[in-house]
Length: 115
Length: 112
Image (cartoon, rainbow over all chains, first blue to last red; front, side, top):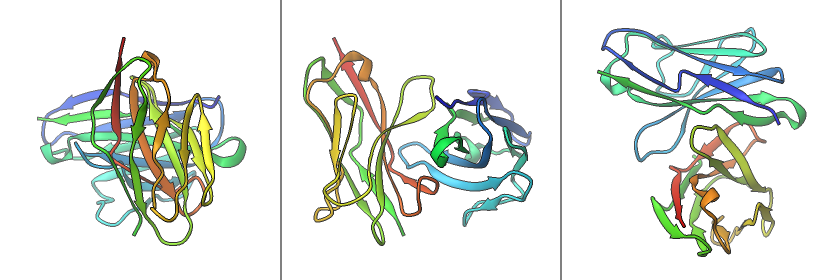
């Protein structure tokens, strides 16, 4: 079946640095990609929706200048957490829509820890 | 807005035990309901779904019935296996597969 590759799976960084997370669709073209965030004991929350070649649409309360999303090709979307702070520590997961029936396929997630 | 509430984990069961993971939802209109599963080190995978009231989704021995009157979609399996150890997410969508609202996830650990 369709596979979405996300990496890194885990990253630890210092406060103030930027971190890039990649999400690739391996065997289908992803017209739409989604980025989610999950804090401990909370739900997966949609952060933004991106369509290839256009600007991402951010959910209310998500800072677009802090969470930069690039979807430059039909197989790759990146999320950059700029000037990360400890409160950005979270589990980030991407999903891609495409292939048959436009179903959702998820990456394995990235655990970000900001010191 | 839409929301999903599922039982907190972790849930620890012995092999061959009966499993129930409760899920209730709040939504406008008539949402589709899903259970996703995430095995260790892998992405979320769609386990089963139901698109209208009284529908029963089933897959790999798991079942869930769309109960509109109680706004519930509880996940059940008659006899769990060690390989079922994973995190299970209840979810809903009001607009197709794409914009999905998730619960917090329930970790299931099955011991031999």
